Length: 467
Image (cartoon, rainbow, N blue to C red; front, side, top):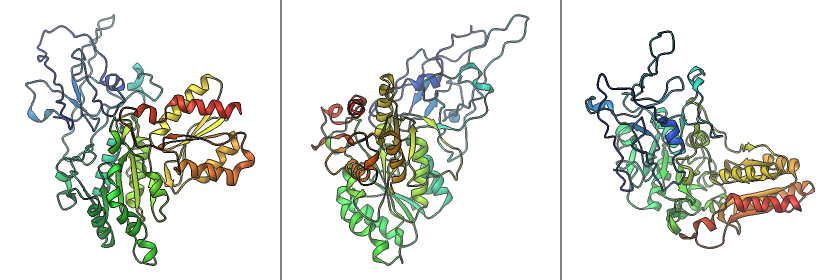
């Protein structure tokens, strides 16, 4: 049963028997998952005529292959589809070529039986949407492909295995695995002394985490939704952020506070807010906002290994889409304060973070059809901020549009606009524009109006291009 009451679909096909005719090849699992809806609230559904019967987990986004009824009980397992093997748990035979050569068959991928193994990922088509070619089996082995929520799972699991001082605490994170299943399986592997279910008390969660950090641990606290972080605000801004300064450097406070933020899942006013500006304004905190699975993995590792407190905002709208290759290296990290140029362009730069990076990429594609080439700069971390990367793109393009889904007034976009005016005003060919949420509570019915869209961003691009 999924976390929202949806029961996974099961295959009702009978087992293949000797003498059965070859079955028609349906679409591959990779192709099926690639066409899954991007809406975070919608679980992908598979049709009965798919050759490879599979379930897609409601939240984690990992594939589960349905085994035949006569298979051993432990055969239903997570599987990885490697680039040198086709996705075929029930593969049809390939007709023999002329000349009588024996037909080739595709072998199924063996499930992993290692206890505590990382949730493997199912490779998907490349970002441009092209399906894998028939020669993909001849290519070198690629990196694992995963969603952002899977990348978060991997980072937490590997950092706990790497450093016994790392502990997890939060509401429903242990036995339930968290609302989005980010901590699923950690209790069984690391025990209740390191994976702790807490009462519904955000102030208590952060306060306990601060005490843990002062005594040598490295706690990772989860706040179920960023909208619930406000009861812990005093602990964060008055204690967590100031402990290192107030102690003259005698104490550090390596606490990571993970929290899903933002709209896009029809969560309404209490599950959709973007409160990053409050914490960017607070000296002593780092603020990280990944937009891709690789950045989520690399930045979360950096946050856990660092010495300073980090508010780690996870854009839940893109928890399960898109999927991408992630470096299979336990030492892979993303250094804070280094922005990522997600797209090249010389007419305008779109500055964003989190889920809005993907909105900007869509808007840049629309602008390119009109002859305006936009660069897209993904900040990745708001504190520290890669000021030089912003200024370099301003000097290159002369036009800037900042995009975020938080309210407009005193948002981080206003600080970026002031920064550009202070240090690169001579390079500007047009005013700095902002495309943001509105200065209202987050609406439920009008979520699509409130959140920046590619069309709204495109309108701003056209305005600065005409200036």
